[in-house]
Amino acid sequence: MKLDELLKLGSQVKIEVTIDDLLLFAEYIIHNSNKSKSNSTVRDSDIGGIDLAMEVTGYAKSTIYNMVSGNKIPYFRKHGRLYFSRSDLLSFIKSGRHEAGQQGGVINILK
Image 1 (tube, one colour):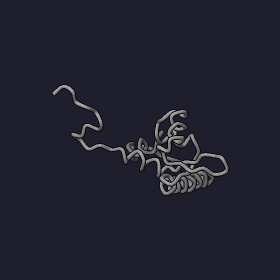
Image 2 (cartoon, one colour):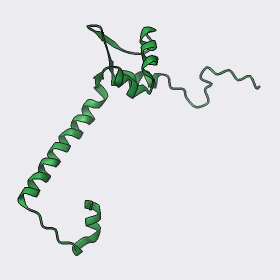
Image 3 (cartoon, helix red, strand yellow):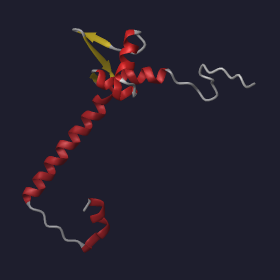
Image 4 (cartoon, one colour):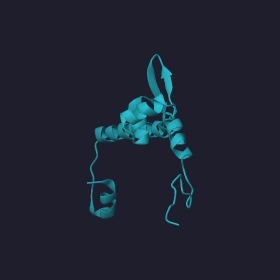
């Protein structure tokens, strides 16, 4: 039963908790709070390989390799390996944004 379900029951429920249960709960809270803090601060600056680029862009591996070879996507190369920055990839995606009403390179031939 989840905590919010227990709270709805109000005073109808009596819960017995041991010290070991409290210690486990405290460890769980500390572990998860540190995890969520590090994810929120590090998330946009992640550096990773092709898998990160695939995750952020949604492109296939071959598409990313083609874009790298044409210098069409931001990347780093170190010791022969490719690296991508999550924040650079997000900026790259956002840079292609078109405002509402723009044709975005599509030619309207039905005038």
